[in-house]
Amino acid sequence: MVLNAKNAALLVGVFQQASLVLIIRYSKTRSDKQVYLTSVAVWSAELLKIFLNLILEIIKKRNDSKASNKSINELAENEAKRGIENSNSNTINGIFNTLCTPESFKLILPAFLYVVQNNLLFFALSNLSVPVYQVTNQGKLLTTALISRILLKKKISSMQYVALAMLGGGVALVNLSEDYSSSSPSPLTSKQNGILGLIAVLISCFTSGFAGVYFELVLKGGTTVSVYLRNFHLAFWSLLLATGTIVCYDMAKVKEMGFFQGFDGVVVLVILFQALTGLVVSLMIHFADTILKGFAISVAVVVATVASVFIFDTKIGRLFYTGAAMVAVAIRLYSSNNSSNTK
Ligand code: C5P
Image 1 (cartoon, rainbow, N blue to C red):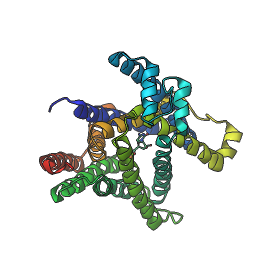
Image 2 (spheres, rainbow, N blue to C red; image 1 turned 180 degrees about the vertical axis):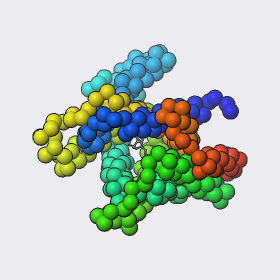
Image 3 (cartoon, rainbow, N blue to C red; image 1 turned 90 degrees about the vertical axis):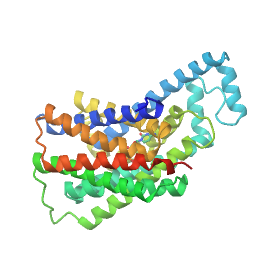
Image 4 (cartoon, protein in one colour; image 1 turned 30 degrees about the vertical axis):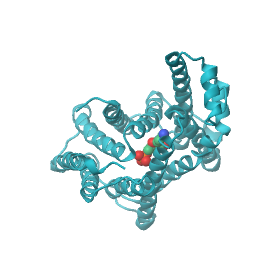
């Protein structure tokens, strides 16, 4: 494997996602489990993303200016001339000013879709058993491919669709191998509505696919706005929406027990990794594409499961080996048909 930017981004994605899975697993299994507000955790991750991408954008601007021997102001002027960004986007103020440009408004839609997706998945999980959720949620691999075909005109051969279906099946088996051995699946209660749960997963498969592909379209769509500035815009709009979620759903709890109730070191670590996910996902989309990002996240599930055998003494059985083999075959099948994957 050649270590170019694309492969490096996918490799970092695999390890970052696998670490996230392990940290979330640890946070769920520890005995002194903290009860914190999910909406506040999501809000905090978006705030961190804003800071992270702001710093990276400033560093990038400084490096660009050094490389081209032009002052940062000259670069900003050039960008302003091309109508890409607000002038003076080199300063913190300038970067915040870019929020009121058409390029930034383009990201309101994916921000909204990601918020809808997060809420739908929460709803789905409370209405479906974990195994059903794990299997159906893999549908997003196929919806992403379909939407890539429609919006990005990406050519995907029928063998590649087969590979994606196999990938989804493999990841589902790997997930199931653990869910059955580490915890008994909770029976559905009369309050749960399986059909509504399935509809929620189905819609979230489309919002995930559409948001990812739309982000790719914006990222690669002609203008030279950096991936960090795109992330900054996306995180800003997401933060606004996340604030709305707290106000609408959790205001009473915040008033009663405080905004950061239940936060401790592990919760902060989970939030930090969630924020890094945004950056790593965007780099995978930037250097590879949304479909390959799905592959990297699937491989991460396999890596995390193997790691948890050593870290948490998790028992894995035949389902895991079958699933991991399916993931491996799917990768081979998809990449060997990759010549048709160009526009
Ligand atoms: O399930 P899916 O792969 O669609 O989830 C992607 C995740 O990556 C979402 O939680 C979204 O908030 C995050 N993301 C991000 N920044 C980007 C692209 C995606 O934070 N630029």
